[in-house]
Length: 252
Ligand SMILES: NC(=O)c1ccc[n+]([C@@H]2O[C@H](COP(=O)([O-])OP(=O)(O)OC[C@H]3O[C@@H](n4cnc5c(N)ncnc54)[C@H](OP(=O)(O)O)[C@@H]3O)[C@@H](O)[C@H]2O)c1
Image 1: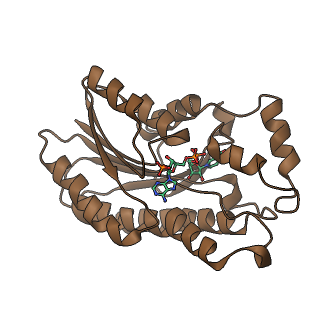
Image 2: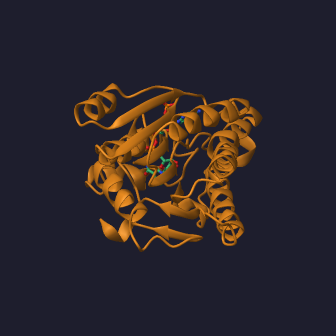
């Protein structure tokens, strides 16, 4: 049995990944503020285990309790072959030049995009350290982690931080008895609500807005289903390289 923990499984890329993961040998653990009943129904029809853990990841004080519940459900099952975590939940807001941003928005952004995945990983390591199974983590990154975008300071910073946290965790795990492997993956430009938010900004907030409108209008966005398929292939493949940061857009 493979356990797959996905944050932000409710829509967008996370839903694409979750749908791809539905399999009778898998148990999906979805963490988000809202559930996705289509995934729940399909999982039930295909004999795939599924649990939804309602959680606003901006409330980082709730994460330990959620991860305790997730691992109580995991350790209850027999024959654990693998435990996988995909830190996918994220937000782009706030968009705009730094002086125009609200302090509270920057604070929330860093909690959801950076602090929450760090705390989830901390608990993942703690709860799984004595479990002998394949253990892998993908942190969903972005090209914005390495390229500064005018108006995306919070997003670029949170994704750059997530990349570095990935590398630090990978290094620490190398000497462990039952190590966890880590990668950060930039998924390309995916046709999700996040892209709708980007296109809905003003040119003053985001000077590259028109380019993103053009990408949508010329059909250059990747579907969450295709991105989910490629991420699943990487997660289970021998090309999974501990500590690497990769961009999968060349696979589309
Ligand atoms: N779309 C792109 O072009 C693109 C490109 C590069 C990287 N990414 C990354 O891909 C990931 C998924 O993005 P997406 O495009 O699929 O965005 P999306 O359509 O807006 O979906 C975001 C997901 O994150 C969850 N989420 C957001 N805030 C949350 C919170 N406070 N607590 C719990 N869950 C929360 C949402 O669930 P609920 O609303 O149910 O809570 C939802 O399932 C993000 O990390 C994003 O940075 C996206």
